Image (spheres, rainbow, N blue to C red):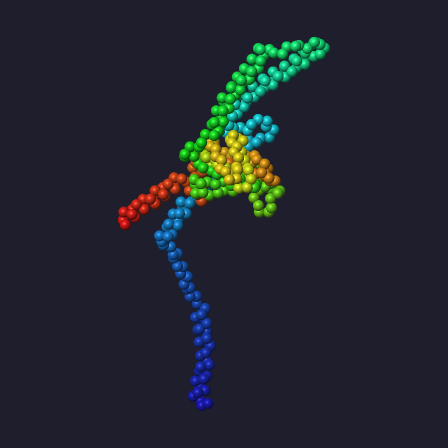
Length: 343
C-alpha cells in the first residue's frame, strides 16, 4: 500500500466515530407517530327483503298466549265438600236448583212420612195392644190418596226435569265453535275443525317425585293432583261451543262436573252436545266410563279465554280464525274472477 492510500484510510478511521454519533442522535430524536385511522362504520342498506322480514318480526311481536293459573275451588273439586261443585253455566245452575229445591225436599218429606208410618204401625198394631188383627181389606179413601198424591208429585217433578233434559240437548247454533274431543287409551285429543283442523293432545302431568329428569311435572298453577294436564282444551268464553265426542279404541266419557256436562265418546260414532262457558277460567273433569287399566289417569282440563286471547292461542297453534279464512277465500275468488275477465 502506497503512502496516499494509507493517508486516506487514516482520515476515514478518524471520521468514523463522529458519523456513528450523528446517526445515533438522529435515531434518539422522537418522531411523531401517526394515529391509526379508524374506518367509519358501514351503515347497512336495507333491501326490500330485509324490510319485509323486519315488518313480519314486528307483527309477530304481538300478544302471546300465557296459560291461566288454576284457582283453588274454581271448576274443580274441593276438600271435604259434600255438595255438587259450583255450577258455572245456566244449565248447571238450573239442575242444581232442581236437585236442591225440588227433588231433595220432596224426597225428605216422603222419607220422613214413610218412616213415621212405619213407627206408628209398629207401635199401634203390635200384638200386645191389638191381639185381634183387623179384617179390613179395602179403604177407598186411602187407595185414592196413595194413587192421586204420587201422581201429583210425579207431575210436579216431571215438568222441570223434562224442561232441563230438553235444554241439555238443544243443538248448538250455526255460529258455534266446533271442538272434537277424541278419547284414547289413556289420554285426550282435541281437534279444531273450524280453525285449521289442528289437534292438541293432553296427557296427565306427573308429580315432581315421579317425573324423570328434564320432564315437565305438575305445579299448583296447572291444577290439582291427578287433574292437571300438559295441554288444555282451550275455548272462547261467552261463545256457544259445539262439542263433539268420539273415541279411537274403547268407550270413554267426557265429563266436566262444574259445567254440568257429560257425553260418552264411542268408537265409530260422533256424539254432539252444546256447551256454554260464560266466565273465563280453568275447569277440570275426568273420563267417567271404565276404559281400561289407566282409566283413572285421563283428566280433562278446559281453559276458557276471552275471545281475543283465544284468537292469539289459535294462531300460536298454527291455526286460523274463521274470519281470516273467509277473507282469504273471498280474496282468492276475486283473483279468479279478475283472471277470468283478463283471459
